[in-house]
Image (cartoon, rainbow, N blue to C red; front, side, top):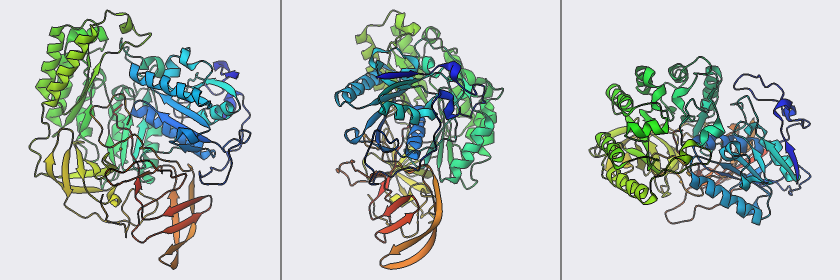
Length: 607
């Protein structure tokens, strides 16, 4: 297999400002005109000599930042005519976006690579593993693409399909935020505000991959927010390896960015903002400003602040750059200044050198605050990190500590007392049971309701009827206003049926109720179409103006309880209507509206 190795000195425009991408010609491959995107149902036979006629299997591991990267890669591939599928058997090439946070996720990658080799499929590996461990034996003879090279995924795929081994890893600028994107959930935009971090935690492998802090400009992020709101997005997740460190490399800070973004959020609270994971050191000086933002009506009163240990000696060994007292200051201040504030945190059990006394301090910290969400992880030594060379705690002790902490955490009843309350919720997803819709309160408490799928993307009042350990159950107490607007598919449409009926994250704060193994559907072209179309409804014809953005329309079937999630949609959108079948033909794509229910899901993580 021929290898094409990118050389950093060959890059053109390496000094481009953050938010701008390098031209295609920067890698020495002749630029080509962007072809029209192809629907999976088009009668085009895959031909290795014709780029854009093949089907790509895309698998994602890891955090929400990785999920966003995959959505960008899927968008570009779709825009160039490739069909993206969940079925590895029907794919002509496999694309695996990897995570290096923990050993299990990397082991899963290695297993998938083995399956791909057995199936004799061309393979591209992307994400943190190849970026941080380019010489890994599992990656020998395989095309790889780095975390800042996602805007060149089409080139990598094309060359790999030709039989070349391609390695694109070196980059000094950030990928553009305005690349074509196919969202896993059309209602949720995962917006990376920066890459890398300022820390040097002794156990962390991600720093090897994502590197030093690199922030997008405030202007480019605000512009992106404007665009996604216009596309009908109802929830924006700010994502990064450390949200709190944002802007320190470009003379900005997180409060400046947050205040610029919330001025663009609709005053009717139809689009909500969720702030991503932040480490304690970088928000200590901005606590009052952050609290003010969290009190804004369009911002969830929720923050993910990992503490990792309740012992100062362990935090020092981890090189976390804060003390337990400083973490308590963060939590106490936010809870005091933000009514109903919910904080999620992380704990690593069995870090090298951790004693029983250290662990007892961690137990006491968790008991003191009784966090509703705690992600508990056993220590995994990652190759190349300082912690991997430290003396390890016996595995039996690590497992016992993990079980004990889990037992303590599960004894809490964080939602007790909510029964009978009527709260505003924002509905964006379908639960794993295929029966409930998933909404969140202002405090980002998960509320499961039985409601028509047409209510996805709406905000309504719900009365809490019962509480569980991970979420609460409610019933909707009002009827939303139905909006006839095809450009905003997240809103309910007039005439919709009222029949009622889910992540794979390395660092979810709690078990996710909104995702399943087969959650990701097919993608549509990343272009916009506007025109007139004939609509047939029950035998009658009428002419309407049809405007639709296909930047974020992956679909997944909503199923009755007990039925399989699997469905082969091809590149066809199916949306619920009570009137029966409606065929809308518009230039380069076809939308079929039937009486089936389809929607999307997305990875839930605060990074």
